[in-house]
Image 1 (tube, rainbow, N blue to C red):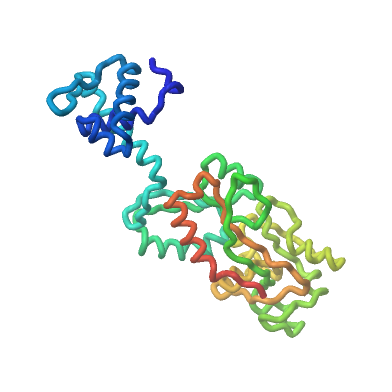
Image 2 (tube, one colour):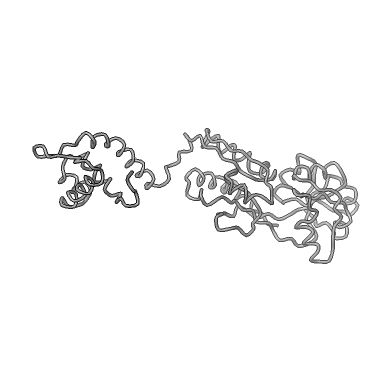
Length: 313
C-alpha cells in the first residue's frame, strides 16, 4: 500500500491531465507548468505506481492498460476535491427539502412560527422547520450534539464554538384580567403604571421553565428593597397568561407577547412600577454551521421576521 504521507498529491493533477490530453506539452499548458516539469512528474508517477503508464505513439502518448483503469476513479477524485475546495453549494430555497430544528419557548411559537410558516410557504415550500422546547440549562449541549440547528435564548456569555446574532430587545409589562376589581378600585386604565404597593400585594404568576421562583422582576424589586408575592409558577408563557385571565392574579410578560395575546384572552396591559432592563434575545448556533448557505438563509429569515419585535417601553 502506498504511504500517502510520502506522496505529492499534485502528481494526481499531472496524471489526470496526461490522461485527458495524451501529451506532456498539452498537459503542461493545461496545468500552467513547463513541459520538463510534467515529464519529471511522469517519471515520479511511474516509480510510485510501478507501471510505465504512457508510451510514445506517433506525436502523442498512449496510456497503458493500468493507466486506463485509473482514469475513471481519478476523475471522480479530482471532481470531489474540486467540490470541497469550491466551498458550500448554492442554496435554492424554492427547490430545497432541508430540515431544521429550532429550540425556543412558546413565546416563539406565538411570535415567530406563524410568520415563518407564511414566509416558507412563499419562499421555500419544501423546507420543514420544527420548534422544540428550550431547556435553559442544556441549550449549549443540544447544539453540540446536533440535536438542534438554532436556539433562541436570552443573551448570555457563550463559548467560542458558538456563534450568535442579536434579534430583538423586550421590555416587560404587567397583565391582568379585564375588570380586575383591585385595579378598577385604584382607578387604573390600560397603559398606566401599577402602584408599587399594589403590585407587590397582588398574587403573581411567574414564568419559570425550571420551577425557580426568582426572575428578572424579582431582581428589579430587590434593587429597591421590595419583593412580590408569587403564588404560582408556569413552565410556559401560555400557562401564565391563561392563569391570569381566569383569576385575580397578575403577571409580568414580555411586552410584545402581552399586547399580542391580550385581546384574544381578555387581558389588559399595564406598566410595572419599578425600572426593568430590557431582555436581549439572541439566536445562537454551532459555528460548524456558520457558512452553511441553508443555515444562513434561515437565520436571515428569522432575524428579519423578529426585528419588528424590538420594543423597549
